Image 1 (tube, rainbow, N blue to C red):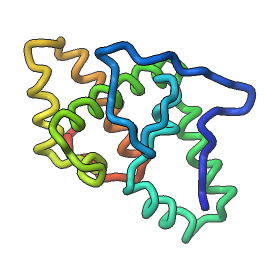
Image 2: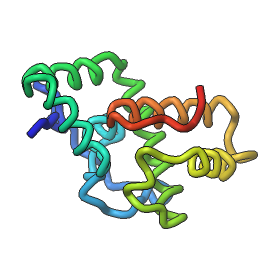
Image 3: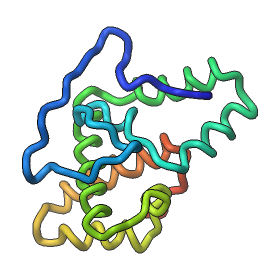
Length: 149
């Protein structure tokens, strides 16, 4: 089975207790980790088929290297920012009872509703940053991105 550990070699991060506005529904897909570790540690039901596809054509060691390099391609601050994106998207999905399967890949309707829920509350730069994080996570999960460019 292909797996990427939740921490890179030499790095141990301890998550803080979530603030009231940062809470989300517990799930085996979303362990309690710092924002900077969410891209790596938060998964979806879709990732199982993606990992099976990767390992059907690549040795596990090569597939693991591929995923690790994808993670290392981002700056540490980007990991934290994109991790915050996943939190906001997860909170939106939780509040609308969106199933795990429907979160990744997320449909155009779900992504549009997520954006609309923050209209007037956040700047377009903020929302675009969140979308970049959610899009990157979809790519890492091997899921189709239905949110446009």
